Image (cartoon, rainbow, N blue to C red; front, side, top):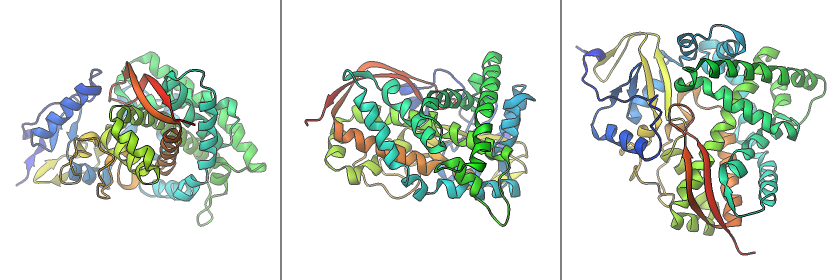
Length: 411
């Protein structure tokens, strides 16, 4: 007979603890692994610790992303944010999800991401040329403007709108952060930001229907499957999903990449000497070692038995990609950050798994690769100058500020 999950004696962790970041987060997450358990208990949910179990629940057809439930728990029952939650592709399932995914996938293939690399390099060159000193806050000078300017190009938006796109992304992304949603003023601001984005993107969609361009919105308008196309409402929300998933996330992952490589100068030296091989490997290692989406939630729609444990319908789980990416059966020396190890092709859970695997992962990888390749040619050394402000892991695990000293490469 399977054991009811409520009868298990589990270690505890609160994913919404605002103090969980940096060394404390590493210590507590590694301690969870060391308990030998594959589950932990949070205040509102179970936490899935190991990779195999995490992938099982992320791929399960009876485990849905609980975005609508989260909205209800925090009183979000109307307004633009509620509309966005209901329409969000991550909250869709069955045939509705299959249709939307099949229509958006062609716009975000590896080949599509490849086509934007020249624009990424132009943006990076422009940001480098704007430097007046080599003592900088890397976040504000590079990792924050770079993805927002890239997504503006991808959308076909004016360059002057890049800052607005970043602002919308940063605020709307907070809908997944329980710490942020517990503040009614923050929720009201998110409502406002969603409304502002809709007011901005709707005229652009209407214009692109009659005046196509070389951009994502035009590609989505042209996409058709068996006679079906995207409606304006579906388009506005898919574009919002891509914005929210492709700006703050890439900014945060790039910031962590430079932080980790600055702390491992011998690896930065090796990357500079052999960028063709080590840049893609470094991106994969950063995604594995310091995932900026540490937790991904699922709610069971049916009773599930797994590993002789019975989970009732309605059970809320969060899969911890950080601990899953340190599974010793999947990765060699998993607690070490090391771009010099040629790890196997096991994919980390940073982008999720199953039908909700991150639709923008190809674009994100391309952006990270281009940034590291560009900086490898320009920077001999990075030195962290003492001020690195890490965010908690409850939402997007980012960096607010990171002061670095740059030694430019000769020539």
